[in-house]
Image 1 (cartoon, rainbow, N blue to C red):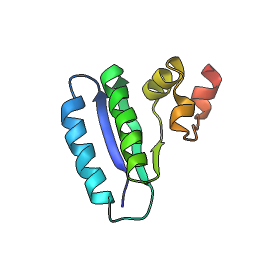
Image 2 (spheres, rainbow, N blue to C red):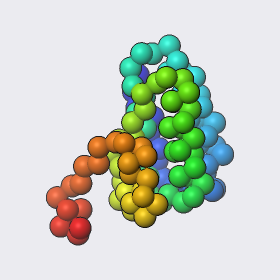
Image 3 (cartoon, one colour):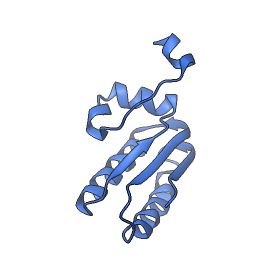
Image 4 (cartoon, rainbow, N blue to C red):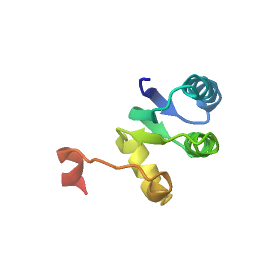
Length: 104
């Protein structure tokens, strides 16, 4: 199954709608033995509500004995994960582009 794409803000203003879409994605993935992927490349903003949604997704995947990865982290996502020290919690490989490496 293709990755679940989040586009735009993942904030308090979009979290409820995004949660419904994400839960539908999880339901569709139950019969698939492959890992679930949440593509974060196009996330322009992430706040606490959006972060809680990602944590919920990780825990839900664990309760369903499914592998879930966050992929293609945007700069907005990386900034929040680093600030909250949750990079290791999610355990996903983080790849920086050449442009992002020069800023680090």
